[in-house]
Image (tube, rainbow, N blue to C red; front, side, top):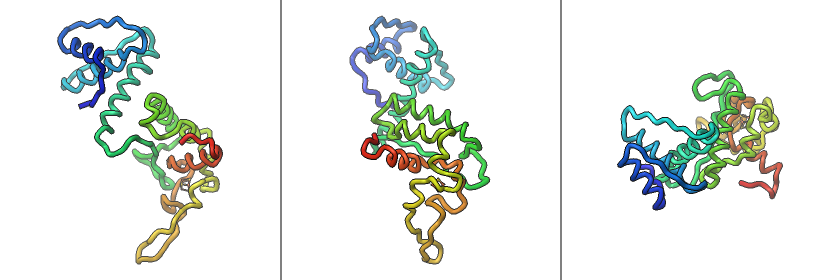
Length: 207
Ligand code: SF4
């Protein structure tokens, strides 16, 4: 189900977990233990309707960044492994003015935490996650307006807007490719910020 690519020792660890009530693994750093633990956690949760797993480590950082990081990566890989794609990019909703609801962050500060999580995913899965960290940083609440403006005046993609075939077969030009009544101050279009990133970096841009 997870499509996990395990090496021999990881297979032995997981086989032991499946066969014994208690398993201890003595090994050096970077041995693949954390990934094996992530697979064991997901197996337990998937195989038991009311399964609960408690993860512990010597420090909170190891729990949150290492073990949970491996769990998130394993889930992500399992989700995309059958897709005809080689990676995932994240973009966010572009709301209309006055729009509220489940797709919209009323305040960009709320989006910052999600951007941090995407950046963390990128760092742990650099080839799988296509969004780049510098662009994600540019989307943060303290900087976003520099690349959108209150009314799209700083937007790098607004000028690239193609003509659309509107009702009645007439060509129309909307305010931007997201429509006429958009709220640029809450624009979540990754492409806007990535275009600005490439404009700033020129030939030194990463992706
Ligand atoms: S809403 Fe449209 S014009 Fe405004 S920043 Fe986003 S893409 Fe640009």
